[in-house]
Image (cartoon, rainbow, N blue to C red):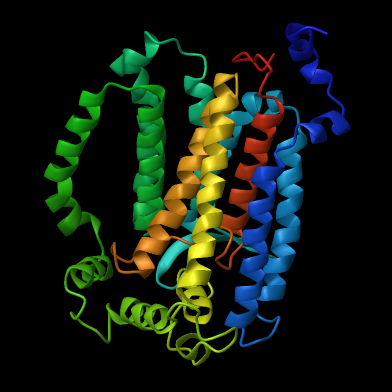
Amino acid sequence: MTRQTRVSNANMMSFSEKLSRFSWPLFVPMCLVLIISVVMLYSAGGGAWHPFALSQLMKIIVGFGVFSIAAFTNIKLWIKSANIIYAIALILIILVTFIGHTGMGAQRWLNLGFIHIQPSEMFKMALVLALARYFAWMNSVDLTKFKNYIVPSLMMLFPFALIVMQPDLGTALSIAMITVGMFYIIGANKKWFIIGAILAVMAAPVVWYGGLHQYQRERIITFINPEHDARGAGYQINQAKIAFGSGGFFGKGYLNGSQSQQSFLPEKQTDFIFTMLGEEFGFLGAFLLLILYSSIVAILFWAAKTCRNRFGQLVCFGFMLNFFIYYFINISMVLGLVPTVGVPLPLMSFGGSSLLSLMFGFGLCENAHIHKDQQLSAKGS
C-alpha cells in the first residue's frame, strides 16, 4: 500500500488502528501529573478524601471521557466545528458578564445548578482551534499580509476585554500570549511585534489607572516591594516563600508541611499547590514535577513538528503554548518572580474547568498525532 493510499484511508481507520498510532509518551506523563494532583489534594484536605481529592478524582474520570472523545473522533469533525466551538465559548463569556456567579470578589463563573464552570478557562482551547482553522490553509504570501491578522486579533481582543472586566487578568494575559505566540509560529512579520510592544508600553499608564482594580495594583506593588503590606496584599506570596523554602531539598514529608497543614498557606489546593508540593517533598519533588511538565512540552513540540498537515501542527503548537504559559506563570508567581495572578497549575490545581479544558486539549493533540499523515482541507474533507 502506498503512502497516498494510507492517507486516503485515514478516514476509515478502525479504533484499533487509531490506538496503534496513539502517542503513549504524551499520555503517560499526563497521567503521572494527575496522580500527583490527587495525592497533593489529599494532603490539602488534611489527610482526607474530602473536600478536594475525591471531588478531583471524579472530575479526572470525566476528563478522561472528554480526552477520549477529543482523541478518537475523526479530526474532520474538529475542523468543521472549530468556529462553532469558538462561538459557544464566546457566548458563555458574554453570559458571565451579565449573569455570572461571583466568588472571591470576581465574577468568573456560570452557575449551572449542579456545577460551576469558568468559561474563560475553556475559551483558551476554543481560541486555539479557531486560530488553527483560520491560518491552516493560508499560503506564505497570505501570511505576510497585515489584513489577514485583523480578524484573529479581534477574536482575541473582544474576549480579552470581557475577561479583564471579570476581573481575571491572569487568564486574559494567557489568551493574549497564546495569540501572539501563534502569530509568531506561523511567521508573522517581526516588525509587527515590535510595534505591538511599543503600543503596549504606551498604554500601560491607561491600564494602570483605568483598567486595573486596586487589589491588582497592590499585588504589583507588592511584587516590586515584597515587604509592602505584608499582612495584606503580600501575605499570600510571603507565606508561599516561607513554605517552599522550609521544604529544603527533600521536604518535610507527606502530610507534614507546617505552613500548609496549619492553614497558613492560602489557596493551597488551587493556585499555591506547587508551594505545598515543595514544602512536603522539597526541591527534589518540585524538580521532578518540572521534569514531567518539560517532557510534556517537548513531546507536544515533537508532535507538532512531525505532523504533516498544518491544522494538526497549529493545534499542537497552540496547546503547547497554552500548557507552557499555564505552568510558567503559576510557578513564577508562587516563587515571587512575577506578580500574583489567578492562574492554576495545569492538571494539579483543584477545579474542573481548567482540568477539562486541558484534557480536551491533550485529546486534540493525540488526534492530530493519530491523523498526522492525513491531508486535510478547510472543509475537513
